[in-house]
Length: 281
Picture: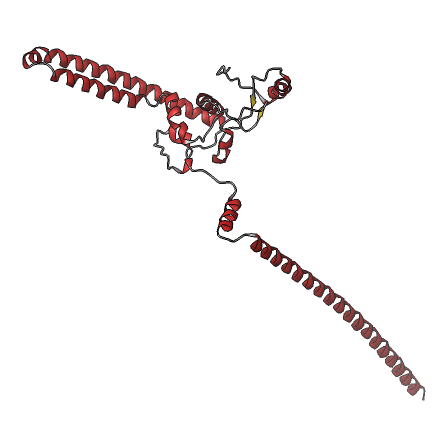
């Protein structure tokens, strides 16, 4: 039994609901986790099946109305291309196209009806039909203008709402920014390209299909890193030995300087003694 009903709860309320959902005798209510897709990589949360308590059935998928409404409420900026038409319909942006189709259909029906009349009947009813067509076109034009004004107000509110939810962050170059600006979105746009988060896995698969693996390259990189580390250690040891050699040489030179200083002092004493003896003689 599906009630098509969803209730938004805060994280604090979710903490209280988790044990209740787990211990319920009939698990008919599921607590779904959701994070607003403000980037393209966050679209994994868009389907509402990232984590649920209790676990969801394998064939369950979130209804489109739930994804659209919770997305607008939460300030979603990215969505898959399949939801574009539904979002435009929910916002009332398809009214202009519908009005144009209604106008074309009314003109076509009127043309088929007038072609079936005889020339005499056509003369009698031409004035009446012309007035009726003009009245219908005027009515459709008024409805189209009213729908366009309503859509403009909706987009103005949506732009302000998304800006508030995003705390002033610029979202011009996002799918929702394009909708607010009435810009055209196509399926081949960069917004809707699938992103492979694991590029390295893809490259390894390609190498494996080509009969090559990335393991030897990885080993070469590690070997190069080890060689570099060995060279660094050797340079460090050489510098250490050089420092010790310089310290030993500086110590020896200092000792030699002290020894030469003592010898010079002894020579000076001997000269002083010889001078004093000469003066006495």
